[in-house]
Every structure is written in C-alpha cells, then in structure tokens.
Image (cartoon, rainbow, N blue to C red; front, side, top):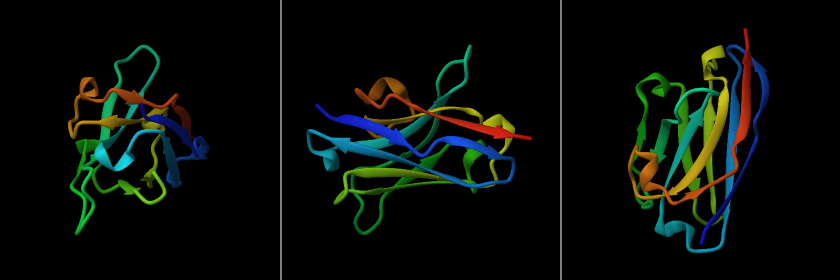
Length: 124
C-alpha cells in the first residue's frame, strides 16, 4: 500500500507560478508511475501529467495538451516525492489537484493509489 499526501496548493493570481508536492510512504514508490489529475466541482477528474517510474537517464513525461509548456512533472525517488511545477497559471486551472501512483497511463482507472487532493485557486 502506498499513501500519498499532496501539499503546496493555495490562492494565486493569474500568471503566477506554484509548485505542488506529493509525498509517498509505504510500498516501494519507485515501482510506480506517478500522475497528477485535477477536478472541478461538477466535472469529471481530468488528466494533467504523468511520469514513468524509470527516471534514469531520464523519466518519460506526458502532459495534457492545455498544460504543455506551462506544467512540469518531476519525481525524486530518493525522497519518495513527486512534484508538479505550474507556471503561467490561468483562472481555468482552478481545481483540486490529486497525485496518484500506479500504471503509466492517462486513465485514472490505472492508478490504485491516490492522495486526498490540494486546492489550487487562480484569481483573475
């Protein structure tokens, strides 16, 4: 069992940057791909970014189209932590952001382990 705890959310202005962290405990973190998803009330949870479990010589990363060039996912297996660096934030990025561990897929159904979520609010 892997437990995930997100942090770093908050209220920012449009154009600002924010870095989310997700600390993992239990299990073997490096055995899993990691992903970030987000959800707005009343809407389905959507894929944001994912990263393969293998990080050497580099990890494979994938992003939703609307996040490409603005968001960067990274992980530090030594610290059992995954990050989401967000820049040029827009009001439409406002959501609860979740990290997840599982298979390397954009589908949330492939991730058995989830954090509790952290709220990101971007004001215009």
